[in-house]
Image (cartoon, rainbow, N blue to C red; front, side):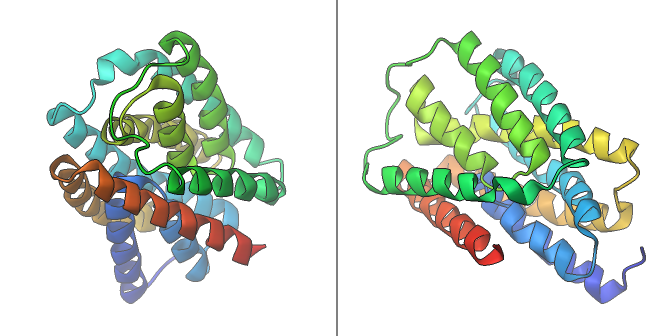
Length: 250
């Protein structure tokens, strides 16, 4: 499928804005996936191309967070492994099932996250006691959220961030940083499956990927400088917009 220069420029802008938003609070897919669909790309190819372009942003944010000492990828290897396994399973499954069947459950879960975050002004302001041991947490949630991201995707960053805060006791800044590593992992795992299936549109994906790199770099630098309250507000906005987007699409 060939796209004209103007369309590619619009996709570049969408990728840049999404990379900025996603590096701060997740939810970049609510910008890029509709953009890909809006220019006439079929749904399964749009999902596949979205994984290519978002891999650039999640990698850039992950690298920047690691350099700034907000997380250490070596300590999260177990989570990376099981997220990869889960995402591969999800990406294979979505090619045989209708992803829209998940929407009602996802909307409900995101509403719960939104209300809980809104009602807890100090949520993620400091590190707290972990409620699960790290090996169990990274195994279980790597498989579950990894599968979900490979299968469907919207809200993945929100689920990771909330799980890391509530169950591992991380503050919001650290949870945001770890979330990007796991997002990158599931993006790459899903992308491999979509490449194998021949669904990726490379030109559109790379053009958006350049935008993602710029946006993710700017956004991750902003997180490193800002207080938790700023990230919390951004997180609430992204979760709220994700809920509205999914409800309107029904």
